[in-house]
Length: 83
Image (tube, rainbow, N blue to C red):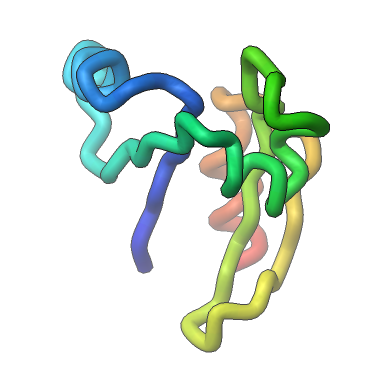
């Protein structure tokens, strides 16, 4: 299993944020909003912030489950329940 995070922030900002919170997964940068637009985390390219959403994607690349509103504290349990 691979966990990835994506943010609209710059590489230095994401690196500092990930280090501060001790993330043990990659936090990718989507400064152009292209991934955010494709996955519904942004409604337009000028969106300042991404919506907090999550997708469980299978090894075949297909979306297995979408989580349109994510509560960061409860989300790990939601994912484990699906797995």
